Amino acid sequence: MADGYRGGGAESRRGRTHSKMDKSLKAARQTPMRVLDIGCAANKMPDAIGIDINPQSQADILHDLNLYPYPIEEGSIDKIYAKHIIEHLDNPRSFLKEIRRVLKPGGTAYIETPHFSCRVAYSEPEHKLFYSYFMFTELLKGIDFKVLLQEITFYKTFRACGIRYLANRFPDTYERFWTYLFPAENVILEIQRPSS
Image 1 (spheres, one colour):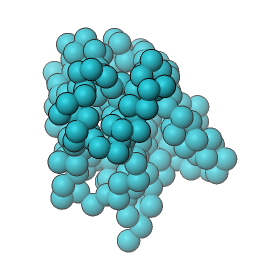
Image 2 (cartoon, rainbow, N blue to C red):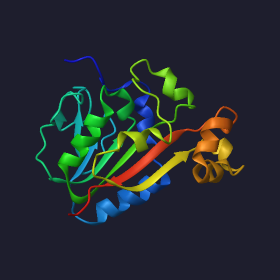
Image 3 (cartoon, rainbow, N blue to C red):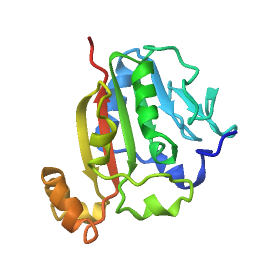
Image 4 (cartoon, rainbow, N blue to C red):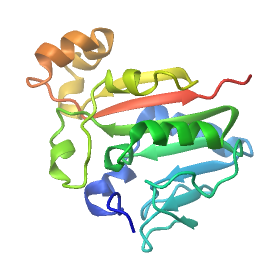
């Protein structure tokens, strides 16, 4: 087994979902589609194909997520969820390329990771990188994806003060000046493989 993501740990936070992810999950359940839950741990999404390295996970496919390609047919997946997994991986660009490879044309991927200002980003010794709003912009360069959503989320405490709106309207200003006054929770990204 290669050094890298082993599943478990504080990633039990996977059980919480973001409201945009909830809507996406409902849509996925209403139409027949192949859904892949990457790094599913013990909370695999219902009716999804789970892939994880941890033998105690609910994975259908046991595989080291740092080794590419995954044992999944090219262009065979409609929707991918990778919640709190990319921060564990050695090469996030290779991971994004692999997501593109397995997605069907028009398929979408939802990625969620702790924002660098979040305490959780530093509490797991297995975390390899800390993500900002702009990290995904850099990682996606040269990979053919359409960005459907890129957003910073916050804990409930800070939502009432309007910081979420300001942070997503002015992400550079937020990350340069406000991030340590109002720490974020996650960075979320929803991307789509172009249809043609």
